[in-house]
Image 1 (tube, rainbow, N blue to C red):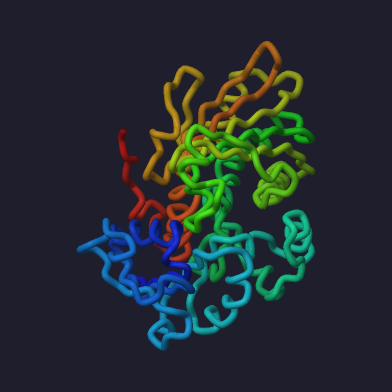
Image 2: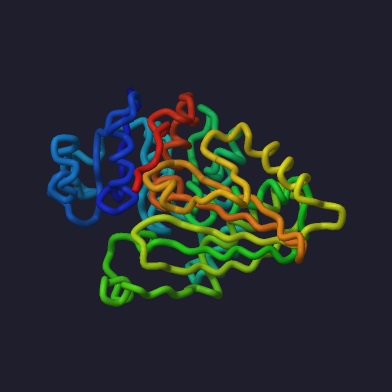
Length: 352
């Protein structure tokens, strides 16, 4: 059995991972660690887990929190994993981090990312960046092997954008200097900590854009697409919050290159994604939305061409808490532990 420890277990990312691990046939949760809500059992904090997980949430300085594990997940904000990962790796565990700490492979790129979002540009463990793998299996499956020790899990908005645009970037279908990502997320994407703008009276029937200059996921989308295309990529990214609990809908646009038609687009997307189990492709007639991926690790893509304006139009749907977070992290764990990547994840969503 793979022994798993979760740091930051009390948040949405932590409980989402617990839910998935409880149905994973090859794992055992050995410790839940967090800075807050310590001393409470997981099923007290989240009553739907009664009878399934009664482990206590331990403070980081509790001796029991030092129990050895094969894989340690950091379901924590930026800045936490970079300070603790080195000691965890030294103990022989693999690390999967939810934050942006290890999504970039050198200190200069990380510094640019941090400056864009107004954070300290100095990485606390720069020597670890070179060994980190960007954790998007559909693009980097060949790097996510049992030899991999450190994974920077993909950001929630970034997953839909990258999976939706990577086939176009690889096949040179569109002009890459002005892609558009228009993305809408449910309020759970803001995390568990209450914020005034996310209280029910402020959020009900309210939709708004935010972080128009400096969203944390823009740079990782550009980096991944640049690696796929082999050339520079520039995109306009507009994140929005809508009055829904979970789900991300990303409307993605690019100007088609001369000579590219709908058949070429369709062929390129199937060639890119047909071996990616968790990506499903639909045409413009599909009556689907975020509800059809809720609770699942799937990304549903509607792939279309607006012939009148010669615009590629891709609509990506994910559950931000599963494929956008805990599910993708577990998919990464499966690969770096030598398991089929669908283990514990091969299930439909919840309907309605």
